[in-house]
Image (cartoon, rainbow, N blue to C red; front, side):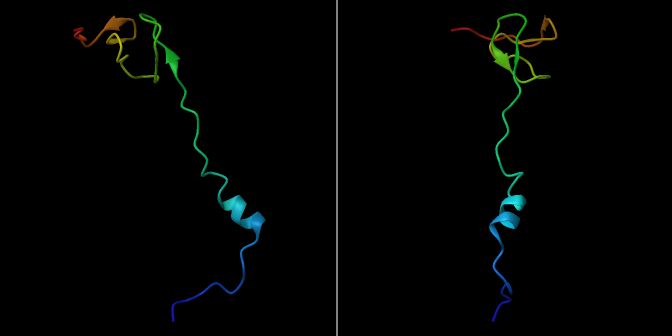
Length: 61
């Protein structure tokens, strides 16, 4: 037989173990060029700007 727990884990102990399981809200910043929201330290996927200059060219069409 496989090993089994000797006692039932209480609700408090179970819930304390799960305190870090919740999803966290992602922090978004506003692009200085187009105003869209994007992750910090990432190129804006809407306009291709990063740190006030265009680093990738976005094709419209």
